[in-house]
Structure formats: C-alpha cells, structure tokens
Amino acid sequence: MDIQGLLPAPAKPPRRQHSLEFKEQVVAASYTANTSVASVAQQFKINANLVHKWRRQFEAKAAGRDDFIKVAPRIPVKAMDASCPDTTLKVELSSPLGPVTIHWPMSGLADLASWLKSQS
Image 1 (cartoon, rainbow, N blue to C red):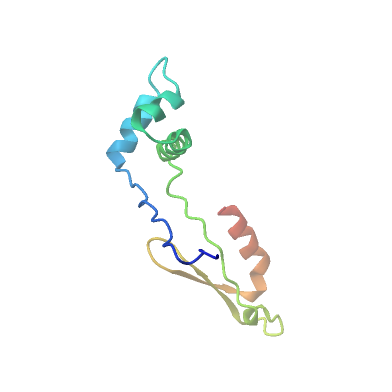
Image 2 (cartoon, helix red, strand yellow; image 1 turned 90 degrees about the horizontal axis):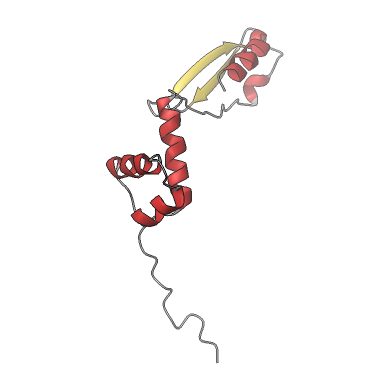
C-alpha cells in the first residue's frame, strides 16, 4: 500500500529572529574570561556557529567594514560593440540606497575594469 501523499507534510517551526540587543548580549558573554563559545551557546540555547558568525559581524562593524556593498555589474553585450568608439557603456549597480548608473566611455574600458577591481 502506498501511503505517500496521504499524510500531510510535517510543519516546520518558524525561524527564530534575534534582536540586536540579544546578539550583543551573547557576543559580550562569549568574550568573558574563562568562557567558551560552546558554553555560551548552550546557555542561550543557540548554535555555537551562530555565536561565531555574530562575533565576526560585530568585529567587522567595529573595524568599519560593514559599509562595503558588493555589487555584480551587469554589462550589456550590445554596449560592448567597439565599432562605435564614441558610445558609452552603461553599468547599473544595485545598492541598499538605490540603483546606481554609471556611463563610461567605450574607449576607456580598461580604466573601468581597473576601477571596478579597486572597489572590491
């Protein structure tokens, strides 16, 4: 007898979302003397990997690295036509503050590539 499909799928519990205050409390506890990350994780009933992740995030924020926005430029193939050297390349970047559009002359593609590499 095939019972597959007769029983409903088990319900997944919703993902927990932790407040910034809770994360700060956990991270602060993980830096106290003679305390391991594993014991802090057990104390707060969370996974130790999550404690490590939050520590990295807070360290990056303290170092000022949290403002970096990774973008993947979309370069249209049509704009790459070098037969018209007077045309410009339109690069559209997305960021949390809104879209950013850059118009770059086709004659300076090497400069654009250098600039994009320096931004990463």
